[in-house]
Length: 494
Ligand SMILES: Cc1cc2nc3c(=O)[nH]c(=O)nc-3n(C[C@H](O)[C@H](O)[C@H](O)COP(=O)(O)OP(=O)(O)OC[C@H]3O[C@@H](n4cnc5c(N)ncnc54)[C@H](O)[C@@H]3O)c2cc1C
Image (cartoon, rainbow, N blue to C red; front, top):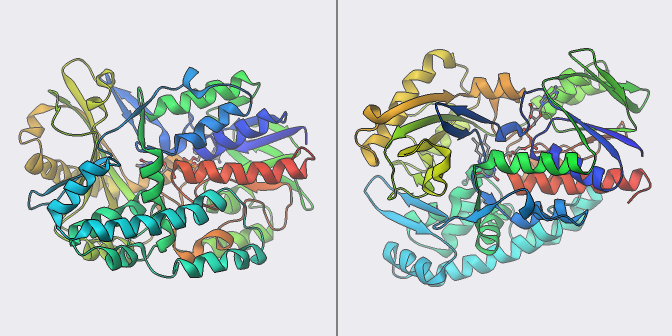
């Protein structure tokens, strides 16, 4: 294999591109938008820097590996800083819980919630370490192309009762309802409902505990910029602002891509990092089998969307940590409203991002950058006009942050805007405006997710949140490792 083209410069596309280019394959990424990063896009407004998406960087080793492939050092391009506490969880009754991997602090925090739960937590930690080993270290970067690979994983799935949900497993170990929420909410970070997502995803706890939670100085956009710099340094090419209109095929081979601007390039292999339904429906739309695959994919369950309010305010807030979860009065009921009923509830649980407490340079002096997000049903479940609903929801969410943390929030705002499900659809071609692609339930995981290599066109590959292992930066970077291995082996470079 001499030449590869990747459609999309999300984390998955970038990681795959670096792997291919490092192995000597001339690689071009073609990206629709004016900046790389995909969900990790960013804006600069009135002196504030707003990251659009991922803010919690875990498993930095999966990223530094991308530099190490060619003997480079990630630290030359990206400055990562540890974040402590990992998160502050806050409930409407005023209870706070600082979540960290410092056992002295964690034990104190757990015993404050429920004196008897430390022992149960340690048992949960054992469980989490087991699934981390099986599900992440062994299988997190391996392609599941056939059912036999699923059968091989079956004993581990049975041992860890993968059919149970994360919340159910956590509840078998600890008694405090608040602690159950604290140890199960993580699936939301990859689009999963803690009540229905396979217990295998409890591995995220061990992942964070061992690898820590990090922040890229200047924001996640700096991590993206660092990846691009490294990719270009080793000879890769990034083409921005030019959406791919068609992946060209001849018989059972992908032969190249053509963009909306009319640019065309031939290649030996194509990898799609774009949304899976968009790829099969629009980019491969000329083939009947792709249309059938698109229709099959459209019948699957998709993760919810997110409603994100970005705001820059006067003042600094040393008392508000970098990451906060503001739980609402309901947990299970709210999740059902979002995932099953397609209801925009009166209450909400929020994630608050406060990067300037770690890096003040992301706002003008004496000011602060925030974003606050609420999971909301995707557009298939809740088909509203977001141009109408958006401003109302934005105000309600800011009011809630005001009630709980910043009383005069509205007077302090210098700049604000929101990002709605319809924006995910328009900007990223995201099916139903989903923020995380396919919902990570057991029946849509591993072999049951989109394969890293197409079943019918052997030089057409997939990478990113819709493929195994799934959403989140470590997930899509793991999918890039799996896809790169397939591509390089097929090209005689593995
Ligand atoms: C608000 C938010 C917060 C999040 N927080 C975290 C977090 O804290 N930690 C974490 O680990 N994960 C987080 N995630 C999840 C994580 O960001 C995503 O799972 C991950 O970034 C998705 O990467 P991807 O490789 O699938 O590509 P995407 O980011 O989906 O990028 C795909 C790219 O393909 C491009 N594209 C689409 N169609 C075409 C076309 N026709 N031609 C050319 N290009 C095209 C798009 O423009 C886009 O750039 C968050 C997600 C969101 C939305």
